[in-house]
Length: 411
Image 1 (cartoon, rainbow, N blue to C red):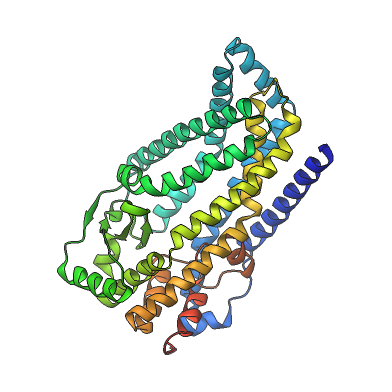
Image 2: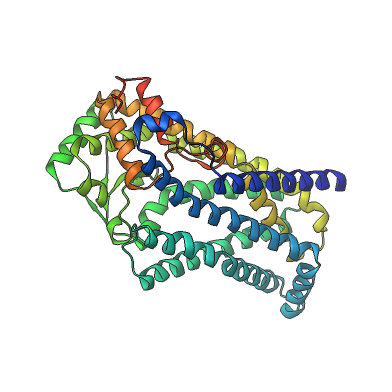
């Protein structure tokens, strides 16, 4: 079992090192511009997108590398073991207090590590490029709210994890898989209702022209649209976007107010049709199913690597740090698979939306305008697109839309 666990760690660390180094290389040196990009965009526009994306990418990969090195260091140096014993001694037999203390220390240290990267990519870089409409105190308030939410939910997760360790020592991985699957559903159900309103204000779209457009598309798609909301995204950013969220009674399509205020009706219609396509194709349900399936594989792997860290009679707080490192590495090295699934859903939604609107030119013009105004990388390195893109690049989206409609005329 120890040999199997060692092989898992070696594989994860090796892949993470390889991926992170290749990612960092392409973030710094993205290579030549793709010839097809110049057919749709100017060279200056492409260079601006690359410059903006470079800062975000470097911040992202350095954030991952530093956090991972910290966890490796604290475990390999023995400091994690000493901290674990200190928390147990401080708790004086109150095991749950020891677990909580260890969790709080590790969470606080990681939060401090993440802070400069989060500030750089979430505030400084957005301010530098003219996207941010938010003051620093407002950004800091959002950061504190997000951190508090992460702290509380993470604490609940730690409680359930150690509860499973102590009560089901042989099948804890299966119990945790069930807990996590339930959490995925609960999160999808309640996030739009209870969490999203902590950060933004939502209200029904009042524009009768947009409402008529929604009803027309809903009839075509044979959907009953319960809620179509507009979000006050302009209080934080000049960027435009939209999303589909929720399950069951909490399903809703949300449009940024920037989108409604800055884009022509044909492109807004293309956005609405795209989000309806996610609904029609059952992408959230499919994502929940695949997430559940994947989680059981991850929990099974965690069982193999954690067995040597605990006994039937003693589960030290240190197990949390080992588990956290395992999850961080697994999420990173499995990103290409997760993102590939997401990109396929987005392509399916794009193509279904074109069939609904019968207007491929508006769909393509929308993608071009979004990419330009949001400073997207218009010619991303193939590796970075494969590894980290949850949505296809604008060139891929244009290509896939053209497969179901009239090609967009070149410049």
